[in-house]
Length: 374
Ligand code: ADP
Ligand code: MG
Image (cartoon, rainbow, N blue to C red; front, side, top):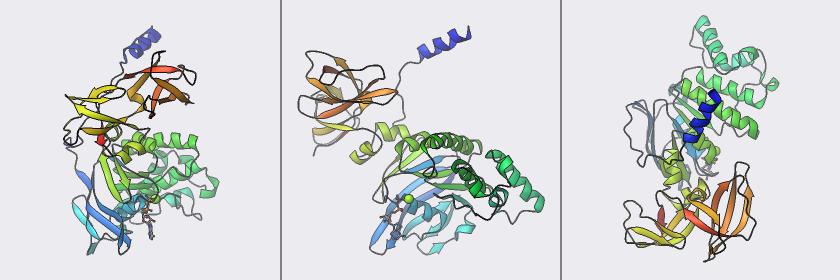
């Protein structure tokens, strides 16, 4: 009986693409962190980050996503107080903690940080690592807080161990427990999974997400992995060469990328020429819906994601299958169009076509993303 019911529910799960097109949905939650046009420079003439603005509301997880050298760590260091800002201001709970001539020292900002290498004290046991920042508490409060943190992070039985006696995942939990113990208003995490193997990374992502949500911690998490950003974040800030390219919900970043850089960085994206004519975008693979608010030249480049295209074997089809990547849960096909452009399409795991097969394409785009024709 139960099995039948769950089967029925699965059957009813209709494919449905829904995401908010605006990211300015009013939130009633107080703003914990506000960066107002901040810039930082290691060398006087060359800013490492330039004009960054973003906000984090209470309990939100914000991911800073970008390639190596794009300024992610510099932003975290500016928030924590390890780097001065040359322009703009950092506000924590409505108070300015950093401006060009005003700098609240890191220890007075009530911001917790988990470093890439965890930076645990090797000569202290787990309990003492976790209790390190709690000197202002009474002895009872201190041990109570440490116990709470160990229990929260699943380390209760490991309090007397030393860091070298722990696995990578356990060390990370200690770093997390230590950062959360002083009850910071904001938690910063710099590539927290980079020292873990892939299996452990998946597990710890889930654990960390649950823990942050359970404790309603406001967190800024740095990553160069878009999948990680999408699974962890309420909002994603995409960075490129020290500048913010886009700040929004993961769905918006994926479906409505603000630039070709973002489009490429957060997933497979192909671009084909198109022309806006009579409320549609005419392309060689067919007509797509006209993009919203589009004003400008009528020649455009249209972004195609693999999930926008379905393929069917068709002897009369003008496109040909050129590559197949089996990814376990799906196949990713490379399709050569008549014009010579290569685009990609997702197909079910069991839908296997021979290379060279002629196919026709079915567009399932609900919206169209276009960029300037170059
Ligand atoms: P990410 O964390 O995204 O990899 P970073 O914030 O570390 O990027 O670096 C941003 C830019 O600042 C890079 O061009 C990097 O070379 C430069 N940079 C980082 N740290 C220093 C430093 N201590 N001295 C000089 N330049 C630095
Ligand atoms: Mg970094």
